[in-house]
Length: 640
Image 1 (cartoon, rainbow, N blue to C red):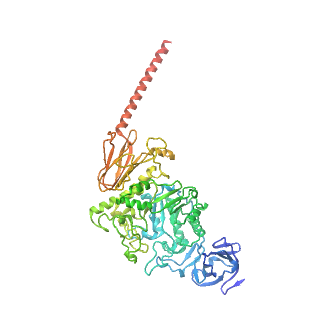
Image 2: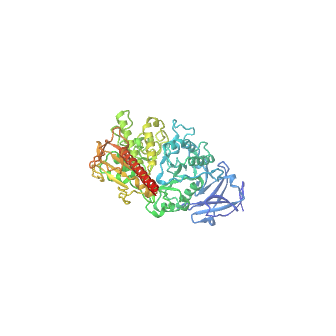
Image 3: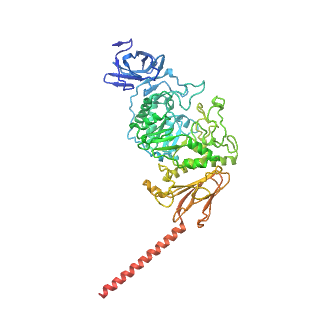
């Protein structure tokens, strides 16, 4: 028996399979995973509960090591009476598997030397919490930073910068039509690690205690409250049929087993619906095939192995769609072929996550307001961040009061959102883009814990037109299954319904012009093909993109028997010109400069009236024939 002045306990080798600290029949089991190359003398430090006062420090002996894991079992103590840490060599660290971390309360004041590990006894009442289980292809994802989302004094929430503040915005998510909220790192990351004086790692891509929600993102700023507040957010989102996804960042050298344990813990204990983490190929394979995560949406760079996916729960996240869309939007040469492919692109086993802006790019408003980055406030002489943003300032660098410039920028933003919402992949909106939020030209505000990174909620009222248009587009997408079929549509009429499932058009019908100088194309989605996916037949859609600086003519195919094309909406204030539908061989339309036009196939009223008239005549003739036959039969019966 080992003894200390303050504490008596029994010690023996523990169970290496139970990582972290856990109560067993023989005592408290402690097990620590040490990274490769860091095999140094290790010890367990016990503190008086709620303090940094050391009660005892106990070394792990040689017989307590199993590979890179050291473990001991302590009998005769109650872990609820102590906090603890580990010493690895000369370094004191929190338990990587600790489910509760004390000592980090204020954002920007995260001192590792003041943090201790503890065991959390979960008494949260999930009640009848149920995950929405929205199909990936039907998802509308909204990506946000917990602190920056509601810190603005005009955010309209009471508990600003917190998980509770995000929960207060649930009516806003519902109004917009969001099905999944994705949180940038919201676990206990160390925002001060490696940062210059006066700066913080605002985004959270740094070292962290991964099993614990960030205390500074809670309203009461204590560890237990942070846990309950996060779980309440999840439960309230689920009540409103909204999923929640967590983004994770791990430094190089982190054990794949640790990453998977972390994902499992958040899915099982916090009921999250999705995980976003850029992983290497081998780790992606392991995570994708993990049985505990089979119903969890997994988002990463890309997935090329169909054997990984069983429930099409994989999401392919990269910036290809963004780069192609931005170049096409500003009218770059030679972009039609790539853009035409991106609006159709999908995979049978993974869903592309399409976005046009995110945290390390220009916001969408800045994309049409700045031609070069303005990152001077980051303190790196404007050398950080992307060099080529594929942006265009529409003639004026930065914000302006010029009416014509702002009207043009508004149209360009509408065009961009059309590209996002009318393509097959699952759209992701970076918070604030739906109403023109700006970061003042900073395309890398990773260290800006201020108004540069905070969502400026007054912009919603200023750009109400854009917000309402985005809301309309989301509803339009949801109401037309052809826009999110979950698989790549074919460009052939493989079921012989009359026209292909998806067809391309340009100046000429049924032809895609990929000439270097072409800046316009259209595509038609045949609503009859929904029957292939066991869905009800829908109206067909004709979607035309003209990013040229002059109006362009488009070949317009037939809308179908007894149907005609009707303009549903156009991003320009100018009208779309459609020629006479009776002109059989020269059917076309003209789309205004730098505009998107969407047409839907509707029953033609004239043809409908003619068919109704013919139907009535047919019924009348049938009734007259029936009466004549009846009279003849009656006369025949009288004679007999």
